[in-house]
Length: 154
Image (tube, rainbow, N blue to C red; front, side):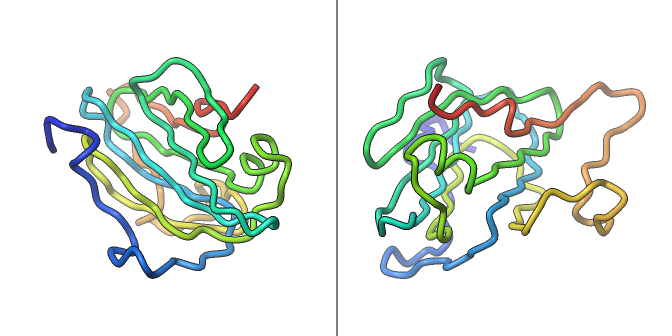
């Protein structure tokens, strides 16, 4: 946790000269909402060989699409959230290009991370191994932030 959301973050890969090279189009994160500012960025490569960044945050209210970055609002429910990010769909809708691969993922303060993974499609809870599931206590209300909670350019 940090007071400055822009300077407190984790990034993969740590070396800026390296890339992840992940071709799976779905990014899924299980994140706990700490009721503080939170943002994440994903850098992708499209079929025009252009690096594009998608930034979703819980502290902005409008979507902006610029040539190299698309910023968008994100709503998190209380407690644990499952964020499902369709990188292929967002790349196509924001830029009219095709997603090739994910180069980098950066998560800024403030949240707890349970799991981050990529997949070829969205899987139902029944299809996932236990460590990839979003468990919600019966007495607590919670939900999942999905692609409908993160809106690309309109």
